[in-house]
Structure formats: structure tokens, C-alpha cells
Figure 1 (cartoon, rainbow, N blue to C red):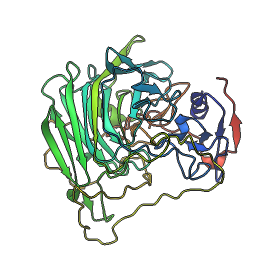
Figure 2: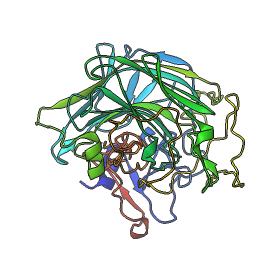
Figure 3: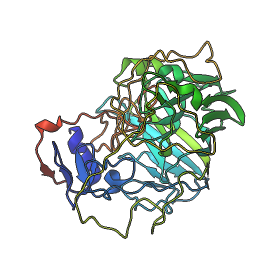
Amino acid sequence: MGWPTALAVAAGALATMVSGTNTCSQWAPCYREGYCDASAMFCMWDLCDPSKSFNATSCWKPEGCVNQAVSFDSVTDVVSIKKYSGNPNTNPFVSVFEPDNAKLADGKLVLEMPYNSKNNRGFGSTVDSSHSFKYGTVTARVKTASIAKGVVSSFIFRSNLVGDEIDFEWVGKNPHEVQTNFFYHDIRNHTNKRSFDVGGDSSAAYHDYTFIWAPDSITWLVDGKKLRTLYRKDTYDRSSGEYRFPAAEGRVGFSIWDGGNAPSEGTQNWAGSPTPWTKDTVYRMYVDSINIQCSGDNPPPASSTGGGKDLTSSATSKSSTTISESRPSSSNPPASPTASSSPAPTNQPSSSNQPSPSNQPSATDSPAPSNQPSATDSPAPSNQPSATDSPAPSNQPSPSNQPSATDSPAPTNQPSATDSPAPTNQPSSSLPPPNKCHVVKVTVAA
């Protein structure tokens, strides 16, 4: 089954394919990766493309950040995107892939990756916060799936619409190591990655992983110990006249994906290859708890649901939204904001998802260890978790995009934008060129 048809199946209802200058209809108002529909899989903020949707209010609103501590001991803590109502106050986390390989067990969030024989690789899982996030402190207690080479576990913040990202990642070939990274507008600069010893096997015990994100800095910690701090003032790029520092609203999430059997040789080398599989193999990543403390920069909007789906409005007029980006005009770096100020987020997706090498020096205060793996890895994400070699919403394993791995792929993104495009996405988009399509309707039996 082709990727476009698989996305339609994943929606579980009527999906309308659009191409060229066509936009979505009133009845299927939300656009995502060449299709229109009215479900959460298409309308959820940061998955839905407002520029091609029916009108400016078709995509759901950003939900805003709320302080919360989630221990994953309630059946409502995680919900499949096919069952998500759009109210973030009901379910703090959403499993964004179909088939859904995330579950709750023994008071833990478990992200599983079984073998997919059709694609000869694993099909993982991505779980994102239902509330959006911008600036604050997030701590997750995680036990990774790094028991074999090729298996990638991720704890990230990502904006799919813009391509900004903050990462903790673990690759199976180095179970004692955690990698920290950041991305701006999906620009691949692998010199930004830093690796650190966790102090033990990350797949054998839980550790507390924290990132503190402010308008002028990002700090990564493990078990309360500071690993590195990145300062915004050190990310200025004179060629573009901008600070390449994450500043867009997005979501916090977790993912597991198969980097060892990824299409990109660079990703395979980074993760370890090949990932060992039998028909009964299942790799698992565990999350004991997560604590999110917001800075107050993106409070929930005043609505009947606190953001997300607006149950009180309906689409009545057709219009389009324009996403713009503001950049400094001078070749001299503008003044860096203080921690109390918050730069306006950009909403423009990155123009490329291919890693672009850069000789820009890394902007951090902690040098990379000499045994750090080479960052010749990953392609970039496509459109949601995260960039990965196989971003795909419903079909898992790209950060930030990957090739479809199942009959019912989900949106395009599995792991995040990271050195290895990821699952936060999976399948990368194999959709037909827009100018070769015409408007058709695909009916799929539920």
C-alpha cells in the first residue's frame, strides 16, 4: 500500500487528496501532507498546515503550557491520536502514530518497537504532550531501550511547524552515553551535538534527564548534574543575520525508532547497524514520570477547552494564513534578550530537510568528549516528530520524518529532528509531486 493511501487509512475516514493550488473543503478542513480531514491526526496544532487548510481557524489552536506532573498511573494519561478529542485537559499525552505502539503498564509509559516485516525494520512509537510548550523546565525519569545497536530512544522538545528542537538521545551501540543537541529551523549542524557518560547503563536503570530552556540559554542536566549550557548570544550567524537558537513554541515528547535499518547510511553509522531482529523481537523504552514547569511565555488561551480543538467555533469563510519570519537586518548581532524577555516565535517551516554541513563553531560551554561519535549522521526531518529518516505520522519511524512502515502510516514524523532523522517521524514523505495530482476522494472502510 502506498504512503498516500496509508495516510488515508490511518485517518479511518474520508480523506481528500489535494494538489496544486487546491486547499481543503469545509467538510475536511485540515491539511496535512497532501491530505485533508477533520480528525486530530490532521487538525492538531503543529501537525496541521494552516497555509493549505480551509481557512485561518481550521487548524486547532496551540494549547499553551500548564504546569503538570504526570506519573503515568492513570489510564487517561496517554491516548491514541485516533481517540483524542482535542481537549488537552483530558489527556496530557497523545500517541501520534498508527498503529499505536505506546501503552501504560505498571505505572510506566512504555514505548514499544516491534519488527515490521514489510519494511524489514522496526516500527516504533512517538508520544507528544497535548499542551504546547515554550520556555521552562522539563524533567523526565527515563530508562532507555539501548540494549542493542541501532535502537534509538529520544526525549525531546520539537516544533514541527518551524523546525526548532532540543534533544536528549540515546543510541543502542553506546548504552552508557547520552547525546544532547539542538536545532534551529531544521538546519543540520552536527557540530552542535555533545555526548556525556550517564554513569551507568541507561537501559538498566532510570535516570532523571532535565532541560532548562530560557530565551537566552538552554541547560541540560542528568540526575541534577549540569552537562552543558548553550547561550543564545553564541549562536549568532553573520551570513544570515540571525541567532540560530530554538525560540518557537512546540511540544515535549518521547520516541523510539530503528536507526540501524534507516535508509541513510549516515544514520546507520550513528546509531549502529544493523539493528538485530527476529520476528518476535520487541524493544521498549520506559518513562516513569515527567514534570513540566512553564515559564509563563505561552499560557493557555481562554477557550472552552484550554486550547486545542475549539468546540464552539465552525468554519464559515475561506481564507489563508501567511507565516512570516522576522530576522535582524543588520550584519551586527542584535542585542541578546534577557531571561525575562521572550523573542517572538517564528512559524516558518525550514526550507530544507537535508542536513547541511556547517563550519559554524558550536555554541556551548562544554567541549565534546574525544570519544564522541562522529556526526555524519542524519538527514533531516520532514514534518513532525522530529526529523528522522522516516518521518511519518501514522507510520512511524523523523524527529522531526520517515518512510512509511505500515499499512496505516500516520502523519509524517517520528522521532525528532536530530542527527538522525527520526521517528519522531518515520517514513519520509513519498507523496507524489503536487503538479502531478488532481483532486480525488479516497474512501476507506473503517
